[in-house]
Image (cartoon, rainbow, N blue to C red; front, side):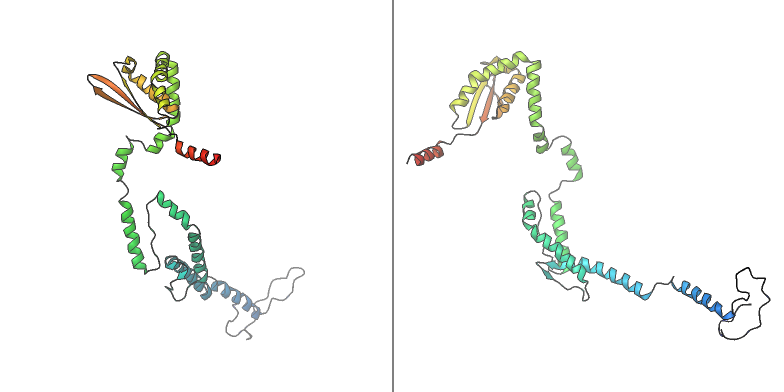
Length: 280
């Protein structure tokens, strides 16, 4: 028989006789009113599946804190806080202040980045719609400095970047010189002799100015009818530290190779002033 739930202290009809009890157990069954403990436990277990008011409030507070944090990041400028929401989360505001403090600490570094990236600072102290408008305008302005994907692919596939050319320029120069010495030994020796006899004396005479123009015609120097010999002369002077460009032009039915050789010039006046001060 099920024990009564509304009147625990009533006396219903007695239950049927129980079986023989095992050793060391009480010979009589528990009274009917003791079943109230199990009923209470069952009710408590069912109540744990329903979220409490405290849990709902905690979730609501967490969501409000996240929203407030995003508003605070937009509203912080020069230490001033724009109170966009009346009930703000102090922890989120402190985080936003720390982020802005880091920004101020590295402001000089960010300014130096303008040498490499074109960008502008946006004042986030104004209303959110105005800040949003300026951000979109800045994105549109930045897009004017970028090539379309098709245009970029067409150019990069044929013309390398200057940085990529310079990166391996020294290695390529050494490789070419070693190849000249190994595979074109006689031509390489004749080019070295030509430079020693005709180009180097002009460089010595113009050591102060730091600039030399050397004209070599094919008629006078048949060696330079071979384009590889011209390239050898250019590479040898470059390896020695000179800045060399070579122009080939047609004059009177003959090809003339014009070497423009630049190097660091010698400053005499500064040296003279230093000697005069030491003498005085």
